[in-house]
Length: 176
Image (cartoon, rainbow, N blue to C red):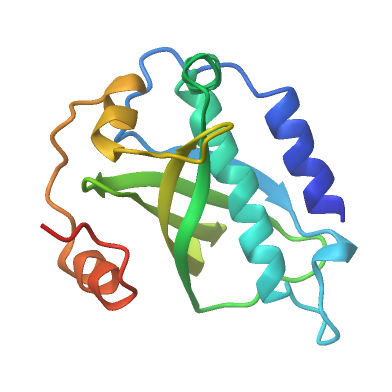
């Protein structure tokens, strides 16, 4: 529940836009492990990682100054697919950072990488395929339109091969 409240706060009172922040620039969110993040083994529960990633993606949009632009269009983000790789446990009270960055997009989705680090050490890596929908109708918004709205070039950089393979494997990649 605590991360849901954190997300609600991040959406309703987003942090200030970062001057000069571009769509391909990383966004860093700093947090601390809370008791509600833990599982019975006293390390961060896998579901807590996903909720924490929601907060970090919300901060990424805020850093771009994207909320007013998205709201004006009636667009909102949803997760189409995600995958996690865990390397090191995060435990109660530890400070950590999540670095969120857009890797690229196709006609359907935007691909993001979210890396959890503690004192410079990688703890987990998440890949997310995000889609944007239109409020009220649920119509999908082409990712190049979202990229352009958020200040990027509608032409995506080439996706890293591991991300392109993953997108095809989970069937979220654009099918020409």
